[in-house]
Image (cartoon, rainbow, N blue to C red; front, side):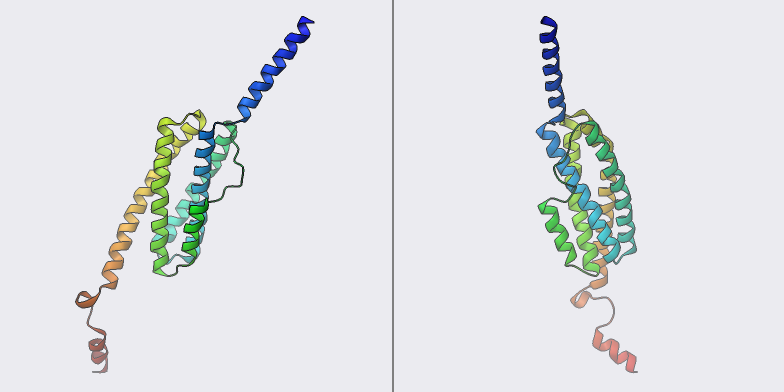
Length: 196
């Protein structure tokens, strides 16, 4: 009888431990949802930039983002599995990022390049903040290690984005000048010169 009670108690304890392992902490789930949303946005918006981007630099950067974030996504899935964290829905951008993507869909030409770079810049700033915070104070070891390991890549993207955005802004200002600062002769004078 004592053996039966001991066995039953052991099964209850084992079952409780199994439930504890299956239910991830809320902070881990919140972090996982943020990472999944951001990663999905980075990939989807970069795929779109491959189609609609005007600048070869923007297209090249978008290709690099797609490659890097696909690797991050695969690593992330493995980490989630090892930490017993499952996301309730497929990896999709959250409502805020879906709205940002919707804005990108409405823009064309060089304005698209600027909008894409701006969206990526904002997204990477936010991702760096999320990863830094979790790398420092996250409570799920596997996710904390993931944040520490992924942070340098996202910081590198942010650095590249800052540089690209600054160059794009400078090129836009130089190419479009206004008023008396416009580059080249006024259009009327230019047309007269052609007739001569």
